[in-house]
Length: 222
Image (cartoon, rainbow, N blue to C red; front, side):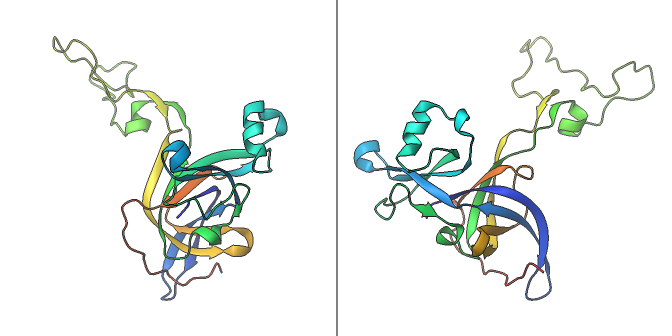
């Protein structure tokens, strides 16, 4: 099964058959265009490269323009590659829709870039308690406290929790269930939350750990 690239629209909730409330993330997945086929003979493995989205022509360099020209589209914004068992079923320039890849009940892994929150202190970044507001504490109420390691090793431990960049990381949420698909507009409803802000790009892949399908909850978007 090949994957999909899409855009996170936002979150909403729907009702299942038994009246249970199901929180879902709405993703506009595809249509994606096949831009390249990787074969065992030429590349040592079998994979399909697909593109999604639109980018201004002036932002595409000549090398990328030549690569995308083989698929008949010059303004694709994002590319992603998915391993497959055999590429014989695909061809360059082919359009892949959400309904061609996933069905309700499929278990998938969704990758996205988390919302960037800039330079943050340890209280916001790691939920530190902070320092005492009395007993002689001065100007360091929200500081991390002592970070030294004495004579040994005489340096800061690698990975020490300190102020720094928060968010803007590539993250994957595993074993999410496809609740429903709206074929007309390539909308996929995924149970639960996926990384990234509204409008952020996400990649949907077959789950690497789940070995079974989950019974879909028959639902409506009412």
